[in-house]
Length: 42
Image 1 (cartoon, one colour):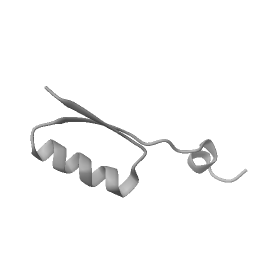
Image 2: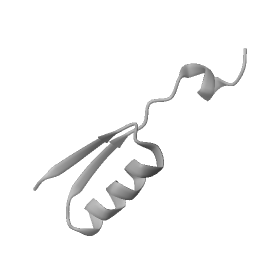
Image 3: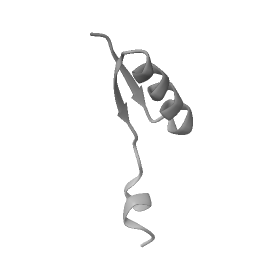
Image 4: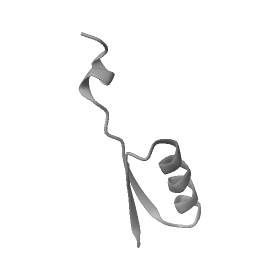
C-alpha cells in the first residue's frame, strides 16, 4: 500500500488527504503548532 505523508499544510493538506483517502491511499497528516498557540498567551 502506498502511504502519503502531509506535513503542516492546513486547509490544503486536509483536502489533499481527503482526495487521497477517497482514492485508496493511506495518509499520515502532521500539523505542527507552536506551544504558545496550544497553551494560550503567557
